[in-house]
Image (cartoon, rainbow, N blue to C red; front, side, top):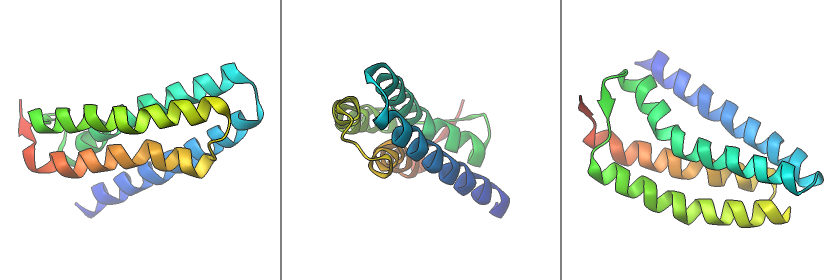
Length: 118
């Protein structure tokens, strides 16, 4: 179990650093590059809970309906500011990384209680 937690924390740290660097670089570039960075951030935001559950519980685990609802709500709440401020070039890399990781981590911990094998 400790190995799985270490892998999960390593993945989250690598994603944080990667998104931070990506947005720091794209902040200095043009609009198409910032659009690609925002798209990558939103995709990571949506995929993180599923990747984390697969690492912790194996491929047979799935979220319940409440986890899906929470994920959709948080994607809208955090994805819109990520896209708006990211496209303007005013979003710092640390802020972008926090916006990307916070919804995924929240949904993972909320959805942990409702995982079921399918």
